[in-house]
Length: 115
Length: 247
Image 1 (tube, rainbow over the protein chains, first blue to last red):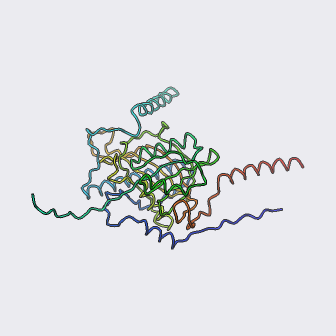
Image 2 (image 1 turned 60 degrees about the vertical axis):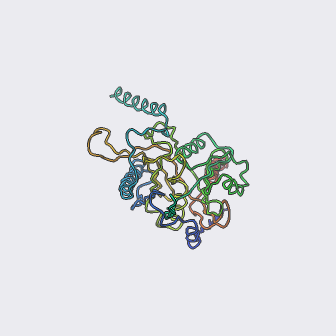
Image 3 (image 1 turned 135 degrees about the vertical axis):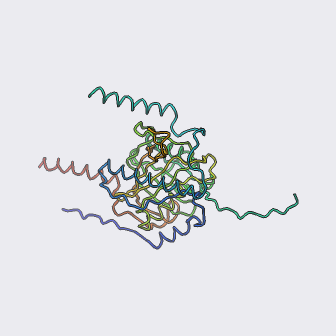
């Protein structure tokens, strides 16, 4: 016998969602420099299984947002670019970056060998 | 010296602190993802694993004890499925999501790097503004993933972008380093480009609750199928094949 497919009940209580958002919303008079949020004016319309174009779309979004943020930072007189003499701990250690570099070298060597 | 100080108009500040913790039973990949988030977000306070999966109501209290007004809770099920709760504590809302396609910063494919504790730009694509659940999610993520200027270990410069994009009804997370100089022409005109740093992950929203780790459901994703159901269906298919052969 056929099993009756269980219908999932969709809940989308727009009124409650909006009300909740208003209770937690950050003060609109907050300076942009406090949140650094940028909205990308486009949606991502690519085939989800097309890895290359998908990642390209994310790349474009990041680039667009970084450029928008840079001009916003200039407008707010907010430091953006790191001076070349400013050093501090990075999220990836030097040893880790060296391993990444080594891998890239190995890869390009392998390509050369196969040519 | 005796001048009466005129109080300067108080500048509004964005004050956020995030409690980050997981359930028991997380795998190394899940743990590395948590470590990545901890490295990227200096306003995160990491806490020990939560003992019980049935006592999530303890979390708002725990967050309060750590002076946190947000909580990110990673819940691992069956040592393979990962769920993420993003909650405003103590009053809610909370968003429960399924985490997939995790790649951490340890992997060698992503060559970018950034300052530890630098404040990332938060980039949301337009889809977030097109639905009510999207707008709420954007607000909550702004609180949680945005590093406040006053965070103790925050750096005064910007060198990376966190992107959130909706595709296929899922939220895709990426983290890119901002490179302002063309590496081939260091003295040439500034030309901005991006290099991915990691981590990567994809979040499928499951439910949004009104309260912190509980309360009324105000949104549920009708398209979400739990990974257990997917596996059961696969097993069922296999069983059916066997059953047919037998008769």
